Length: 169
Image 1 (cartoon, one colour):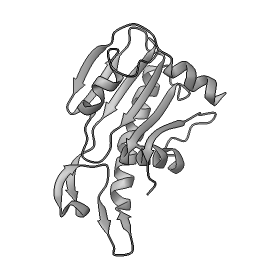
Image 2: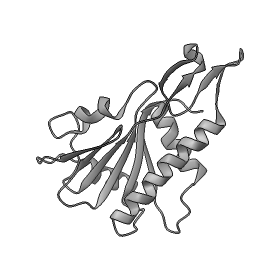
Image 3: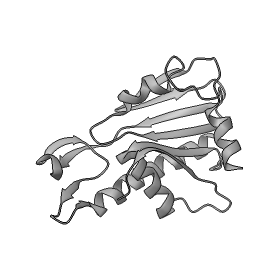
């Protein structure tokens, strides 16, 4: 069931999206919206870095019914980068025994993603089943955190996390 759903979501089609920018987020809008892929970038990245990958002329083409929501993390000081402000879903510090993630930042970013999931569900007839959350690197860790923390409490809700190059907090 999961494999066939992902296969359908990720199958190639030849069509073009309407592109919408909302602040630092990028949305690729299909003509008929039935599914949504929410994608979270890695540490130091942005939604704009992934637009070409998901655009129909890029490496990935989704079905003509799938909206792609590319979210951008807030800019915050990142401890392992000597406090340099960068786009990050959460701060990472070196404790001497390994890397430590800010639980507060993870929780705040999970809530941002959960709010986007709620908005998307309303657009597709209050259906959470048509939403997939995924990401790259730190964004992947956030996608997994959102799924594991179960911020969306809906009966019969199917959530998937599609990850690329992940590490877990």
